[in-house]
Amino acid sequence: MDSSVSTPHCSFVIYLNNDSNELPLFIQDVRTFFQKFPLIYELIAVTEKNAATCVEQIQTAQTQSSAKEKIVLIQNQKFLGRAESLRQGLNKADGAFLLLADPQMATPLGDLFKVLQNLMTDADVNLCWGERPSKKDSPFHHGAAPRHRLERLFNAIFKERHHHMPIDVLCESGGLTKSTWQEIEKSWNGKKLRGWYLHLYIQKALTAKHKSLFIALYDSGKTSPSFSLWTARWHLLFQSIF
Image (cartoon, rainbow, N blue to C red; front, side, top):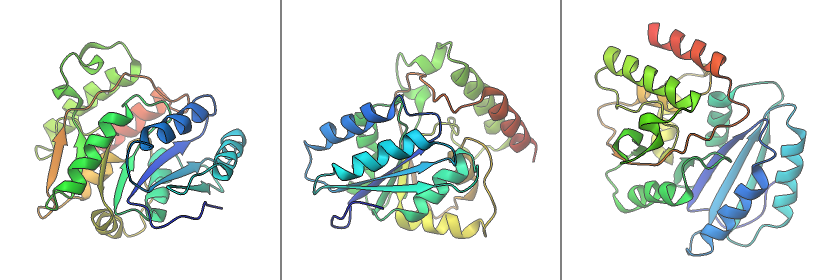
């Protein structure tokens, strides 16, 4: 079920598993933020199989949508993980510009809006993504958050092995045009994506014709309860080898 509005200008895709505590505030903040702009936006929520509370919260939000908001609920029939779930959400998106967000809002909506602005105003940019090391006084540089420590370590590993990759390939805040996403999706030929991180897969699939722009974004280090440090470490180690 989704709310009925005109074709959205942009689509935000979120992954939900054990995130019911943060979800209502996230939806409220999105609505408050977009009151200031004459944009129709789409929120696509992809839920894991047993995320019943999140499903109920999204269904309630659908009944309260305004004329400028479209909410789409996708329920996994089996556990897919975050990267594959976000892929399913992006495939269903109707907006011309597609962005990843998280209900914890570790990256503020204002920063994500900068991503959207760059995509909308520069027709040559196919992908605009966050680069947390470029943000002055960012917690990412010295924060004690386990996720940050893991990402700093593997950012360096992937950069060493793949020199063409950005310095912050594990940043999960960013966006791309729908047409670029469709090209990337086609290149995977149905291959299942594994683990937490989608941006890493996206970077591996980009070609020389795709113009990327990286901008400084903030990341507080707040992390979803669905994130497993050990599982993420295992998947990243596997991807860094093969």
